[in-house]
Amino acid sequence: MKKRIYQFIFFRLMGWKIEGSIDSNIKKCVLMVIPHTSWHDFYLGIFTRGITGLEMNFIGKKELFRFPLNHYFRWMGGEPLDRSGNLNKVEAIAKIFEKKNEFRLAIAPEGTRKKVSELKSGFYYIALKEGVPIIPVAFNFGKKSVQFGKPILPSGDYENDLVLLLKHFEGVFGKIPDYSFNP
View 1 (tube, rainbow, N blue to C red):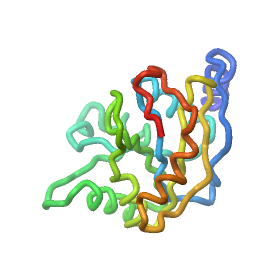
View 2: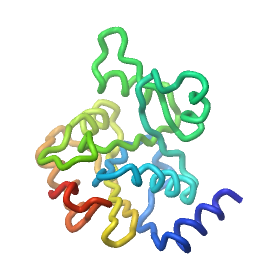
View 3: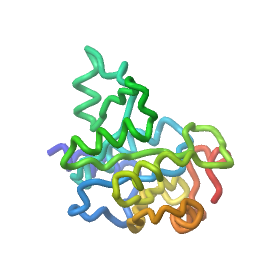
């Protein structure tokens, strides 16, 4: 029932579409979501998750996962990030991957909703450390389309792998086009 409601709102009322897909056999991956220019990206992700029927996750600081919102954030696919014990973010997120049988982590490598000229590389090093593919996902407001790309397993050569990943985002514009990342 929920899936049908999401489909009606997303496809019929909002006029959006989903292009491509994630192979349901890929149980663990990093979803590289670009561009991230607006709070509207959150509900697009929620609709996409509900329509595809695949678990998709996000990370939030552990303080967000306290009563009364802790159950809501977990239900929405959230996982608290605990950086105690001198773990850096990559190591802390890798520990979450290790505990889960299924974990598709959505990350916006821009790190902000404002205009950036370079991406943060943490998404790449998380995938490399865990040996999971990176799947590029474009929230293309210009075409009203969520576009899933082909999975790429990181080789360890960040610069060359990034060139391959960024091809998926050419010509893609966010809700606020001036803030969109330009590959």
